[in-house]
Image (cartoon, rainbow, N blue to C red; front, side):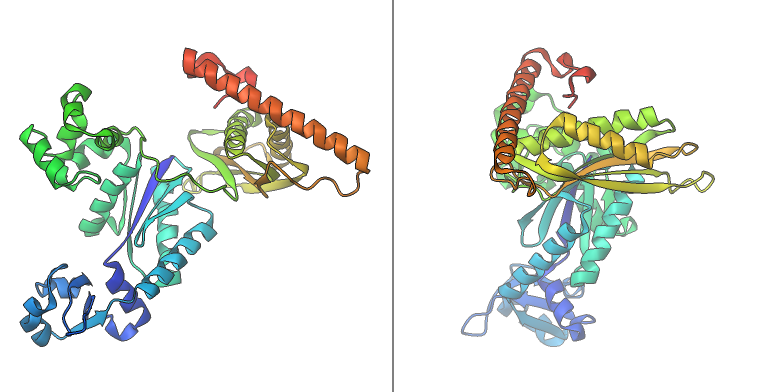
Amino acid sequence: MYYMHIDCNSYFASCEMATRPELRDKAVVVANGNDKGGGVVLALNDRAKALGIRRGVPLFKMRDVLEHGEVEICPADHRKYRAISARIMDTVVGQGIVQDFVQYSIDEFFGTLPVDDRDEVRACTAQVKDAIWEAAAIPVGCGCSQTYTLAKVATHFAKHYPAYGGICVLPPADMPKALSLLAVGEVWGIGRRLSQQLQSAGFCTALDFASAAREQVQPLLSTAGMRTWMELRGCPAIVLKNHDQRKSIMQSRTFAEMIESAEGLEAELSAFANQCAVTLRQQQSLCGVVTVFIATNPYRADLAQYRNDASQRLPTPTADTSTLLRTVRQLLSALYRPGYRYKRAGVVLSAIVPDEGHQLDLFSAPEEQMAAFDARQRERELERARQDAVIKIRTKFGKNAILKGMNYEE
């Protein structure tokens, strides 16, 4: 899985150019005007930056440049900027590519991509980037890496190095080189004062900071600072918010080596179904539809190509692992074709509802409905008890204390 960061370029100015096409070839400055005709520069496009205008500078200090540089000054329209931000949010969510999508600020977004292959991550990110441009005409820089903080690092390179084309995917192997090129003060979460402290201690680059031992940096850092240190080392430690109940849950993977056998695919898909069930129970919800997809490698023109998916609506919504596993295996049996080498597969749970008050079977008699309801209540209680027991065992004895035969191979 990769974490994704999306950062809109010169957002307020980009919004003005998106809604006023006549501005696209001009230097554009957005300012918060006041009653006396003054104000401060809030945002500006590249043409305005080339004239020497800087954000945060009062307009009266830029009078000569503004008068002779053919600069268009736009009063800030925050309602417009919020509306365009909401359109970007809806566009990305509607694609169904990015999971756990979060609006961090009016012009920044985070999410995750449930894929591992670098080329596929870049292809998915390009789809998202293009969709944002089509829907809102807003240029964005996108970074993808192993944590939110490293994704922000990747976005820094995407926006400052044109060769990336606005997208930088930073896998673990490239992290040392990237972090060595970044000043420690440029890292998300490190303010001016902490930056000075770290530099005084000899940590000048992000790599210096990330490579330091815990006992070297811990005396200098708050809890938030330690999370940043962990994230730079590739360990996810930042939770942006408690996500609302998901409308769908997906687990998928691009395999390191292609899989030919049905047994191999079944093992992978069973693991995905298991993790989906865990997520489903964690958010106290049930799913009504299970979808399975399998695909060969589209980048291997020398191999036979096949991609297909199938869905099954469940008689009643459930979060029961065994039911989901059985459904996934049935769908795979219908989808699998021998003679192909499969590169990617996944499980998607949809039609998600809260685990309280869900609709029962319309055609059951009242007493049957009550019996079914009581049975499901007992089933949910048992599943929660099992989950709690598994968590306690693994907390005490380690993740591998419970292995494949137990239906809890998280």
